[in-house]
Length: 190
Image (cartoon, rainbow, N blue to C red; front, side, top):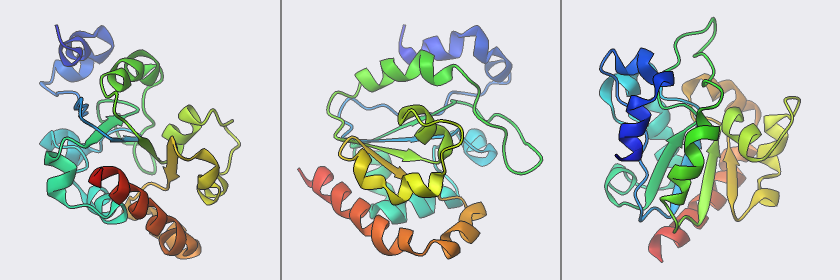
């Protein structure tokens, strides 16, 4: 039985699998870069294609890679904090379910032994992987991204909902994104 089959068969996911929904992730053994974000949005869950939305377009732009490299090169892995769309909240989506990363991430990451960098997209992934307390300010974490290198590269979520944050923090696209692109280019070309 594959990890995918185990996730599908996990009773914790029966609410989703009973509707015919499949877990959204991509863990090729050849991955050099892994992207860990929150959970798929509704559009992604319905299409079955990770980062298949405006957020994904911006993410690829920030990474400096094409859709072809993102989806077909085998150099990019994607593991969300939850494999399924968690539902709608008052503003945005519900948070990823607790315990999913604890249970499945170690096995999926082990399956990608050539990983040279993990991009942590948004607060859920950053707080989990960087062992931050709930009071940690994500703006500060992203500003201090260099202290988490070379293993982790924290970035803001590329959602259009963060346009206001991006306008208030122009240093992100002026300074952080070029460093991200440079590192990704070096990793992918080797």
